[in-house]
Amino acid sequence: MGRMNLSAEIIRLSETAMKDIAQKFEEIDRISAENTEKVLSAFQKYRVSEGCLTGTTGYGYDDKGRDTLDLIYADVFGSESALVRIGFVNGTHAITSAIFSALKTGDILLSVTGAPYDTLRGVIGIEGNYHGSLRDYGIGYSQVDLKADGKPDYETIKLAAADQRVAAVFVQRSRGYSNRPALSVSEIGIICDAVHAINPRAAVIVDNCYGEFTETMEPTDVGADLIAGSLIKNPGGGIAPTGGYVAGKRDLVEAAAFRLTTPGIGGECGATLFNNRLLYQGLFLAPHTVAQAMKTAVFCARLLELMGYKTSPVWDETRSDIIQMVELGNPDLLKRFCKGIQAGAPVDAYVSPEPWDMPGYDCPVIMAAGTFISGASIELSADGPMREPFCAYLQGGLTFESGRLGIMMAADMLMAADK
Ligand SMILES: *Cc1c(COP(=O)(O)O)cnc(C)c1O
Image 1 (cartoon, protein in one colour):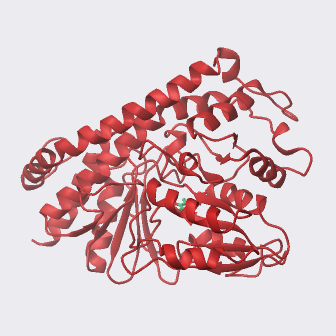
Image 2 (cartoon, protein in one colour):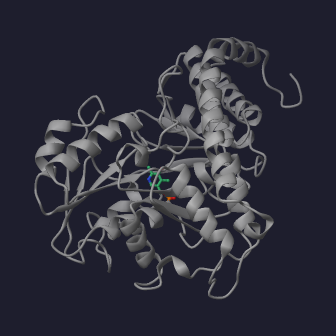
């Protein structure tokens, strides 16, 4: 039926899902409105002008657009300072610079949300043995796992953070690709208070990937010393072509800049190569784009629940990231779901994703993404490790209309398996 040949059954179920989730959409719109006001007022406060939207070459001294955008990010995130750079190659790079900003030989990094995201394990030195890892520099690592219900273990965190060698406490806000809920900003605030009370020396550093603008507060509003994230996720608004940011306490942001470039130079060099407009326009759109991705996730949850699948979060749960998990239960359905997401994309819709052995994973992973910006997961995309219980992790959607169609394509692929 229609130009995309969606089945009548999926169209009918989608209409039911849309009715069910209407109230949730109002809540998402309210968050987006408040965050838009935050961003827009910062643009006005720092007098963004056409001169900010061009850029520099060479050393990149006195790049007005770059330096003003740093002030705007700091303002939006309620922090003293920020560093927004296309020179951060990805989120891992920005988070790594953030972690190194607070640690010296003999110190300990304490992760309080279990094992960090896969790509950070090599940075810490708990996987691989790379030159320049924390371990290579004589920096220790300890970890407090989340409780069985996926919530922070506040009592154990206090005990572990009391060790005065702990100079940085690491928090991952998003669920990432694991079966635990995202931490809310208020839960992160409780961790910050507990850590600062018992160990004033320790900086709380938050991996903020996928979390930006999903709530009206950010971790830096509730006591986090430093946050970091990727510009091809939420704060780039689907427009920033690459890059990352750190925001937080002035001295830590400066130290992170010294790790990005060189000690002494920090954020003062770094040509923007005419990308400033894209970073400004992306931040301007980000609260809205994140709302589109959240609506896509809520719709996905509800539609698949109506089809009998287990989801996390469930459609009406409070969210603090843009990730939606769907438990498909067998390899055929996981492949079908990803193929459907791919078939619903604006780019590369004709290709068919297949599972492959990705470095850092203990089983093949199937990934669906047809994006304008390579690897941008603020655009509709899905990944699934080919192991029990065969879960797909979905995120993004630049517009709800297109995100919804992508989910309907995937749902139709699942439905066809039953026949
Ligand atoms: C995306 C992400 C990162 C960083 O990943 P990159 O691919 O390097 O941008 C780190 N932590 C979490 C939770 C993420 O979602």
